[in-house]
Length: 91
Image (cartoon, rainbow, N blue to C red; front, side, top):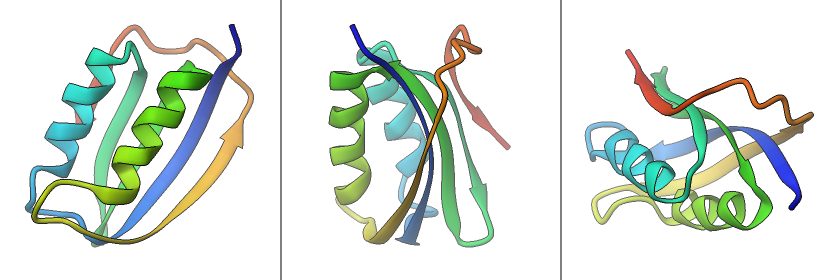
């Protein structure tokens, strides 16, 4: 199984639309660990998990919640570390 770690910044209308809460719920379902937080007017996340699960969560990130309007995603692949036990929302 290929494991991945990705650092993403989601741009657009992504705050105040339950984006982080939905991201956390999906990450938990997909056994993805890491964190998400609001920065400026964007959502940032660091995700670790298997390749298929990361691919699935990235699809969600391109669409967002029903009230979100995702304009773009900056994505950086990083070496997998296995650093986290769970997925959390950082304030």
